[in-house]
Length: 427
Picture 1 (spheres, rainbow, N blue to C red):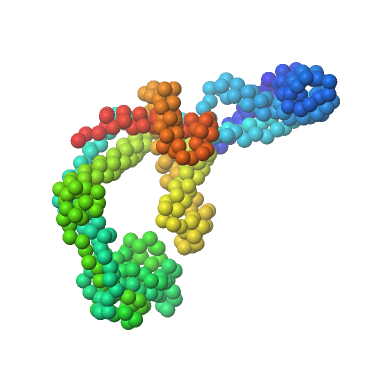
Picture 2: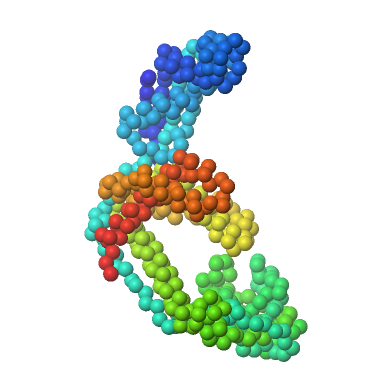
């Protein structure tokens, strides 16, 4: 086997591999056996026809093509191993010559795992901030639950207090409709904050069928940057005023929420808020730890394949988040006046940061010899299978080598994060 090796930009290398006619024989013989086993050849048992007969029946080129993938896989892996390289993603293969009676020549471009020099992460200390949950936080949750269980009655009077006002809303700027600023039967609660400050106050005193025109400014942090902090004209047509009656917060109210009394309900809410606060703090600490290590570390050139992989994950996460809000990515892009290419550019910096974070975890696991045992992988696989037992394809997906690799990597990352927290966090 002859091998040529060259270095390419963007952490890539290229192998040119050539196998002689003699070196091809074992691969071709196995491919011929497989072809004869899969197809019927008159006078021979499946898998027992001689090479010449198989070549005559299927064509010798069919044997070469059947052997091609095995030849590429085994010889490329051997060449990579000899060079002691760690690569990521799928290699790009170009067959240069594949013809009966000739050497087999192919080229393979692979992306290398970048070299990383870890900073002295042991010197980094992160202070964990434990948030105390007080009566005010519990009261707010109770009040929100109370509002959700309010009874509503259509009334013939001016809107006031805690009423719900149904309106048709039309927002314009310089007499041009604002995108997304037209809404039919839109509910506004007078005692709650609205995303455009001041709108509920403008509806106080209005009755059914009354129309009011007024101007308000969008908040500075509005997600549509061209509207942030800008003034717009509003036209609100009242469709109905609903008087809301809030339930009394007593033991009966608590029982409606599955608890025996208010004391138990308050204790449950307080505990849930503590758990949520701890989870948020854990996420914050993890991000601060990894960011700190990234800043202290040195990275070789990041291969494009890793950046693209993170961008794809970011797209999928956005799709899922939008789906939970009842929106499709295509509708979101139209509303934001952007294309997928625009988003991909915006994701570039975040994808690079996420790639570095993943590489840091991998490198620490390697240096600290943190691994996932076969037993741990089996247990995690069983846990995932139980979680998604209603999915008829779960066994097929869990048996996929890619899924098993993902689960193993996830378990290793958990161990790394646990170790980092033990060594880097101070309370």
